[in-house]
Length: 285
Image 1 (tube, rainbow, N blue to C red):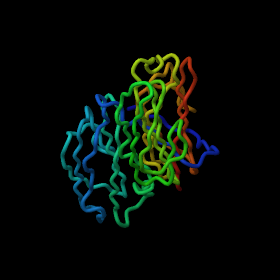
Image 2: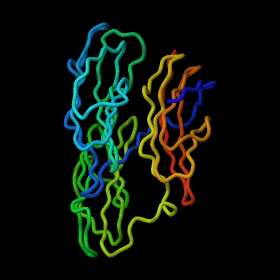
Image 3: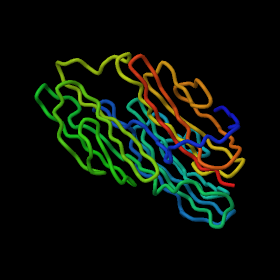
Image 4: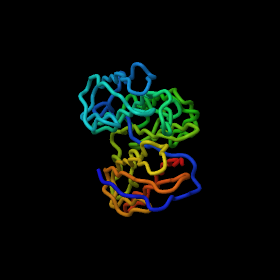
């Protein structure tokens, strides 16, 4: 992780953040499953502690932010934050990442609380069954989200926030699910392979994929900091607006000076085009 001081507040037109990450995949590549992620009790007084508990299946790496860059597949940890905190568990493997959130409220604590977990959309599952079909065959896409007010699937259009639909692609196709709330959006991906046809285009002919781009916390007191984190696939270059070139997978601590709304923009490029993601924080006096 690196650190940088933001010398001026970037006041941009966008007013909501964007968190993107991939889930799903074929039968041999299934995204991790979060069995549970809870904090008990959900509200404490300053100086008290709570127990953060989790259980995850099918993950090669697990992190909990803030505080645990690496975690076991199951466990419990005592936490005692000084202010209201949203804990974010990220479970990853070669098929993608699955995220879960738990909000711990600290009663009467000073400072600006983070965005409540209840307003951040989460894709709980997104899969295709079967993941491979013969030409002329069909598969069923199924998805479940929480905290989302609307959802779309690429090539299909608007769909319910949870549901299923039948698809009959003629070539191997990756479907992108976008779940949106009033404050932000998330995306997940799953693929249907069509046997006897060409596979997914080579990297040079498909645009980069931004798995996620987040700011934690999203509400910062004057002089405080936030951590930008991102993960990008299939990019020849990745640019963080106002900072410059960055690694495809990295994190950066931003210290603020000034108040207002700051929107960060990440641009990933290759010979096929570019992909853009943004995330927004609010800095209070």
